[in-house]
Amino acid sequence: MVLGRPLPLRIGDRALLRDPGSRRIWGVTVLDPAPPPLTRRGDAARRARVLAGFAGQPELAEELRRRGIVELSLLRQVGVESLDASAIATLAIVRKGWLLPRRLLPEFRGRLTDAVVEHDATNPLDLGLPIPVAARSLGLPVAEVTFRPRAQAAGRGTADGSAQAKTALNVSLGRIASRSFCVSGR
Picture (cartoon, rainbow, N blue to C red):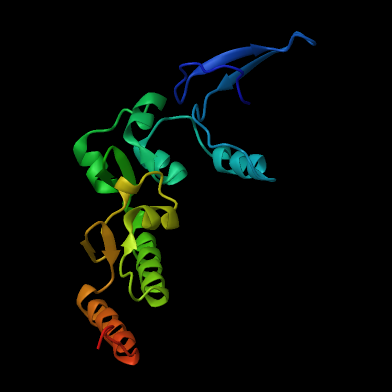
């Protein structure tokens, strides 16, 4: 159910709803006061399956599992109370107010390394993936959340800077050597 106007609801809140036509009263428990948008066909059914086994107790591990990358302020807003530094450190990495679940890091590292390698292969003179592009390729909400793939120089993620710099230099030198230059006036 989506409300017509925002209410300060938290996970586990209970409410009574009255059907004006039949005058029936329904009891509800809030499972997710900040749901993701349902924009594609079948999103509502998928969301119902995700919430089906949820008891309505705000727990950090469950919210990270359901939401993936999430803003710390949103977790506070929806009622997650176990947000002490040690609990967070065991489950996530904190960057700029966002939590990145540790379980997603191996997948992100692989995808990010692949994106950098692909970018550098197609753009040998433009080595390193710009951090905002890297963030978009991972589906991150903001570029500041991006962690370093292996190295970072001048705001660009690189897979292996020294080998790729040599490749770029060789390509550049090859292009220069293949061109004939003439000096005007001689």
